[in-house]
Image 1 (cartoon, rainbow, N blue to C red):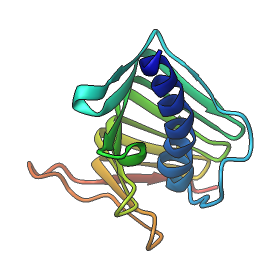
Image 2: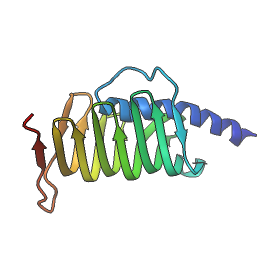
Image 3: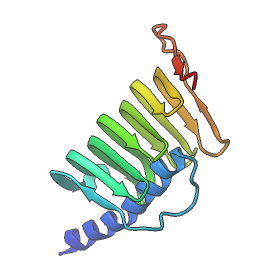
Image 4: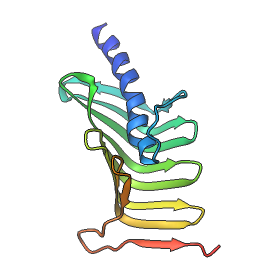
Amino acid sequence: MKLISRTKQIYKIFLSMLLAAMFSLYIGQVNAVEDQIVITSDDFSVEENSSRAIFSGNVIIAQPDLKVWANKVIVYYGENGPSDIKSLEVIGQVKIEQPEQTAFSDRGVYDPKTEILKLFGNVRVVNDSGAITGAELIVDIKNGTSRFPASQDGERVTAIFSAQ
């Protein structure tokens, strides 16, 4: 019974933090999540010994104006339980869709303390005016900056813009 109530508590707290912190902030919306959040996956588990909660298998996170797909979403939390989120990770075929742009990557990590979101591997951001691709995207929420650095193996950033 204790595990079930703790699981419900973990689920409720980190879901709103997951979207408000990682994805809404990525798109520059620092406001709280106002509407219902729906998360579907093939499996949900809480691993108290390793202080993490995991959604896996065809994960879809949906709210108005934002939809996220990934193979897996992991929430790492600290000693104080689910209100002490250390980091959030999305893994495998990541897609973050908003009304005006869509981002793709192999993996993403958000650190709520530094307010930095990093997307890794085959990163691509597409909107009506074009697309930017690179190995990594770093979004500093606090300072309002985004950066596509060249990869360590020399892969360069490519931007293609429409002339319209």
